[in-house]
Length: 208
Image 1 (cartoon, rainbow, N blue to C red):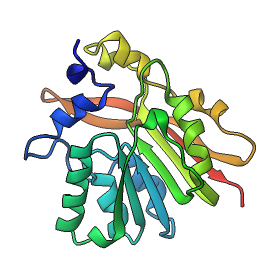
Image 2 (cartoon, helix red, strand yellow; image 1 turned 90 degrees about the horizontal axis):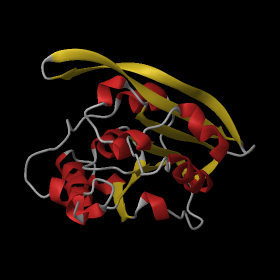
Image 3 (cartoon, one colour; image 1 turned 90 degrees about the vertical axis):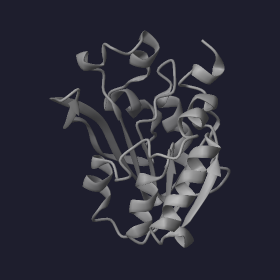
Image 4 (cartoon, rainbow, N blue to C red; image 1 turned 45 degrees about the vertical axis):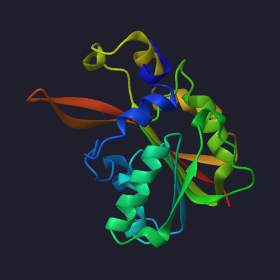
């Protein structure tokens, strides 16, 4: 497999986001809406923002949002979609690989990442990198695909990258209060057939 074909490397996502058509729906992810809709807006970081659906939703609700991704094409789409939605002034972008993320003293009231699946069961390490970016009193929301028989069409590396919420708890220290750590069902349609899959969902609040 070439680097450009490796879904864990930037080149693959550069190619995916190289066209003109949207890759995803453009709407926010379900668990983001469920957990953040009632929070007062502040500063937010969306790591692995893709083409910016969650970024635009947050900005439209008054958040000042930084969309972070390792694909420059994805970040260009995020900027464009934010401008088209009239919220470009509340959106910044940050080119960074989640596996090398370093907050470097920056803090946000909300740190979120959806469906980021680094290889070799590496999500716990990413969560540990994200934790210092959460401001006191702020929230960390991590959502991903939980292992499921529905994903048997994927290769072993893809399946090994999936996780359950409990797999991430060890990455947080006593500075965090865990509010949610569970798998939540979500209805999807694949090849015209409805399926229930599970979103591994971790929500934690950094103590003030």
